[in-house]
Length: 186
Image (cartoon, rainbow, N blue to C red; front, side, top):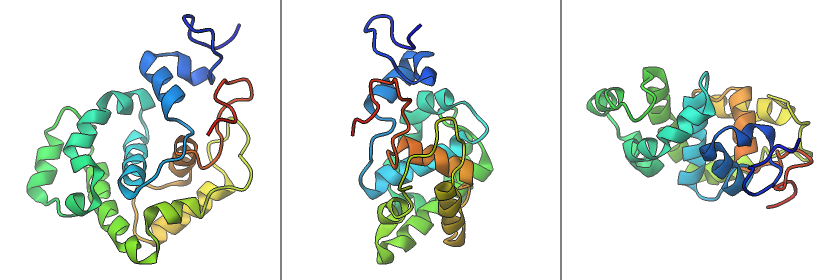
C-alpha cells in the first residue's frame, strides 16, 4: 500500500504521513536547501531542541520558537541575558530545557564569530556529503565531521546524529526514499 495522503495519492517518505503537519513540512520544506544565516541558525537550533524528543513536538512549537528567539537573529540572541533565560524557561510555547536554551544563546555567539571566515551557511555547505547516505542512517562520516568542527568552534548540542538530521532537513543531500514523489526535486 502506498504511503501517501489518501486525498492526493502521492507517495511520501513513511514518516511524513502520520500527521498533516508532518506532511506539509515534508512536502514544502524537508530536504530543500536553505539560504541565509538566520535560516541555518534556526534549523541548527530546532534540531538541538528536538534531541530526545519527537520532531512533531518541535514543528508544533516552531512559531513560538521563532518568536522567543527573535526570528533566530544571531545578534539579538547572543545578547540574551539571565532575565531572558528566565523568561524562556517560563514560556510554555517552547521546549523549556535550560541546557538547550543556553546552548542556543552560546551558538548565536558562535554564529557571529563565523562571519569573518565565510559564515555559518558556508561552513555547513562545506560539509555536504558528495553522495547521499543510505536511507535509514542516523549518522554519516559527513555528520561526524561537521559535528566535530562545530564543537571545535564552540557550538553546543551538535552531535553527529543531530547534524545528520540537520543535513537531511536542509537539503545538504536528498533524504527522500526512492519511491517518494519528492525524490530528486530541488
